[in-house]
Amino acid sequence: QTILSLDHKIEEFCKVAPTVQGTPEEIFEREWARSLIEKVKEDLEHELVKSKKKIYFDVFDRYVLSRSADGELTYADVAKEFELEEKEISKILVHCRERMRRLTTERIREYVAEEKDVPKEYVQVMRLLG
Image (tube, rainbow, N blue to C red; front, side, top):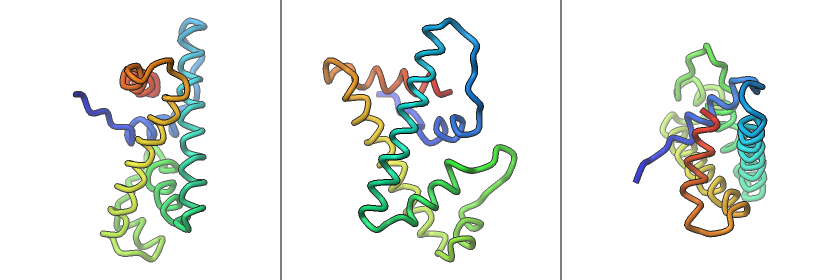
């Protein structure tokens, strides 16, 4: 089974402006994937706020979602900014990345006719974002 890096795809998605190149179908599919990930980010934020872990989303947002394309940001930088231990940053990012993967899979499940189609659609979303 192929492992796809949702983290890298999300980082790229957040840094790149939407493109209008391609056929109408390709543009639609890309925008659908972008919309899906936007909803997943909202789901993650809502989930973490509800469970009193807003700082998790803030750290994830800073390190992954809002990270500038040209700036090098380390765990140490983020730890200092949020007054946390560096090992805590690692733990938070692992948690958020795992939740993003699961939430993405759950959202995809809402759109497919059969469960067996979920992995194929997940791969397609990652391809469209990258």
